[in-house]
Image (cartoon, rainbow, N blue to C red):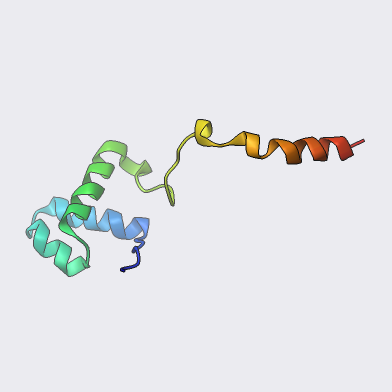
Length: 84
């Protein structure tokens, strides 16, 4: 199985810039950069939707509601019981 590749923010932005120039077809650009064509399109969509804040994180953010805080409650209760 192939490992997931991680590309820097600078690489992604440069790829989108080259794509937007339109000097070569997206499929050719993707081959030269070593990425899939649909990945270029996803990056382009992210830049157009989020602007400079695109590619700011390293993973998915599920929001605070997705955290299972009840997992930490027993430890928190134990720590508070030890505090003066």
